[in-house]
Image (cartoon, rainbow, N blue to C red; front, top):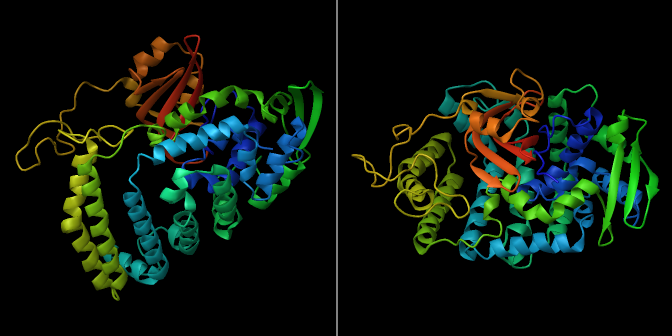
Length: 471
């Protein structure tokens, strides 16, 4: 099994058209309940074949997932996993949580809640202030894009679900239960009117004639998928998918299932479960911190604690503002006063340089290198004036694309040798088994919009088997 591209990103160049469209769109259903906690790539292993019925039969297991997602129940993704893999994920989260100072974690959550409250209660004042800052009048938001101003309340409502999730508490980290979080918070997110609206916007943005036109239609499509057992044994089965709502090619409709610990899974999903944690570490932003042993130093803890305390007080000042002039003054004081200095100090403490060692699981931050420049802190170099080092390989100078365009990285490189990849892109930032990860590239999604910066080449027998893109 391979790490999957983020929902909405192309997966492999040879994926079936109808199958890819539908299962990518199905991912939209799951992303709300999973994404905020960083778990979206865990059930993402199911994202290609999401399908609700009797979990003890191969066809029923698939239908159970289809129907569950259509009914805003993302927990069906978790329930589809074998018990040993559920335990593996929970144990890794528990191990990682032990590396996070509980007081720091609580303070972060407090700041997030206070920020969300300000966004909710100071909406009019914030928008007025932005208009003054940008020198634009007229519309409600001035210089803020209408996609934000028109959906401000919806964004805040989703943030409220996230910041009040028990998954953000130290107590939950001591005994994590991903399934419960998906059921409670994931279900709230997927059932919210704001999620429905944003999902519809994403579907419209895709502008695909073969795709459903709305979430309501997508749910109808999901529930209408027919799953037929072609053949089966006690531990294997061959299924066929069909639908009256959309066309599924013959190749895409065939699906092999296997039974593991009483759970029926698509074969390729089952084959990848044992590498699940490594896949998460490779594909999720900051995922390498999962299961790590690196803890904050006393210096890092002190600096971060002071920064959070100052930020908390600054938010109180913003919350007390009654005019846009007061708010502008508060923001200016934040960025130019103690808070700005502390923020710069965090870059030194966590980003590398002559100390700090980098953020746990992440490594040194860009633009900070050992050395001294007049007027700067020892051990840092002003970004943009740092030595450039050896020239970048040609692959970093090309504007790639997926889903169309001129230089389609997802179509050009499958089948190419490791030597060609190294010649074009240099040595990967990370090698994890058969996966070569490159960061800092520029890949334009021609179908959905947006630019991705991470490319993963899956190598098999010395050649590229699949190209995966991530933000």
